[in-house]
Length: 122
Image 1 (cartoon, rainbow, N blue to C red):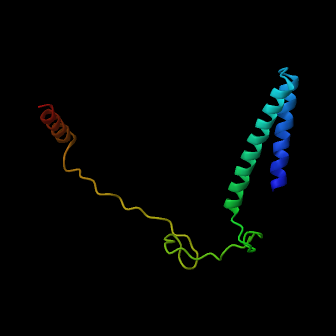
Image 2 (image 1 turned 120 degrees about the vertical axis):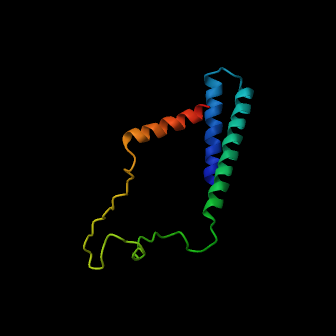
Image 3 (image 1 turned 90 degrees about the vertical axis):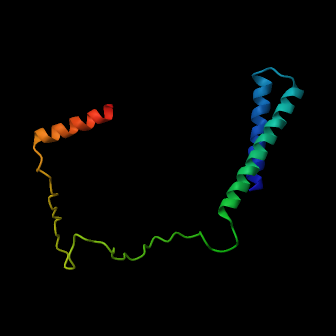
């Protein structure tokens, strides 16, 4: 893994050095300095990424995580399967009608609403 981080650092050095020397017309000293800075930035960032990946994987020497287990556990029957009988016949839901209060006529309801609004206004 260190080899990969070093390669990234050298690629950063060479790209920064060449681009600084050719396109900006800097002197050799300035281009080398900027190349070293590019090397250090990519090397340190590569080490940080390497550290984060190694802590995320947590290799403890075991074989854990090296194989994929594609078997699924057997399905357990759900405790509340309310719409099926034990013989798997479908029973549609039946809804009971809610009781409605039709004792008041429309005029009485309108008077009660108007009275309530008048009391809110005061």
